[in-house]
Image (cartoon, rainbow, N blue to C red; front, side):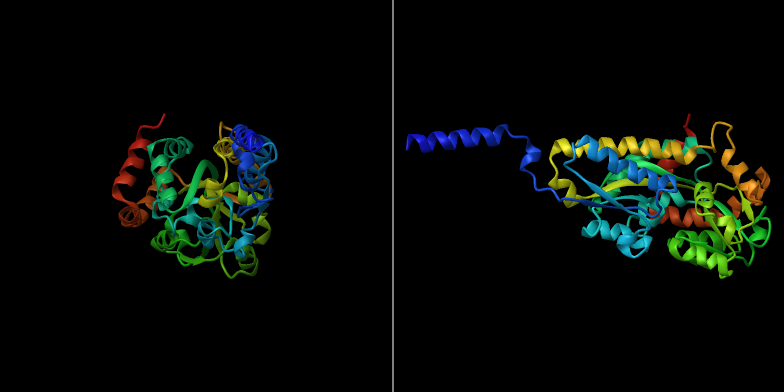
Length: 340
């Protein structure tokens, strides 16, 4: 009897002393979703996150990346729902693609809200970013860190675009967000929503005349080879990325490993943002020079011409501010105005 009690006491002591993560039930492998692969900063950010998580958790958490949103058959707009449902364990996703499920994410797509990188940083790192993370968390997903896809520029196969009049009647591929439909319609264009998997064939066949994306995507996807010979630097919005984890998966990890995954996301996010901006900031126009070297005509509208775009899209801005939340939009505008 005494031996049995002694054995039980020893067992209890060992259980108490054992690391918490040793008592957790972990999956052999976790699924990480991204839209783009490692030819792009986005995909490299996901890859780096997986590497850092394995390192920081001493191999307890192993992540496999699935680019091309292959876990949802390439449909970016289904990604957030799949994360909530547990089809996807982790993701590095775009605010645009998740905006149908989290209305506050439409903030970043308001036309001409963010005039420069300092404004983008002010939103991600300020009170606005915290409020956005709370909105995501209310939807059953754990947000950990920011990344960046970049300022989105517009290209086409028809002609130079310097003013809204140049866009009239042209067909543009846009992402699956009604806000983008409204923005391009306000500028006289004909927007067509389609996944990225369908975009390049549509551009190559002439089913659509143009598209909008960051320069890193334009170059990485070799968009100039599918007839896109005109590119306008208008930077009408900046598309942040968000590193997230499914709530049940997150709760299954020890506190120690949760913090390790968060630290890994923060580090990977900073590295990804630096990569996404490489060749575009600090007076370095390397990426723009690379675009021009491919025979693409780059147009840079002046201040007065950009004001024409802003004026025509202002009703869209005001309409969507009500959907997003006027207080949140005002908070974002104030943080941008106070940026340093």
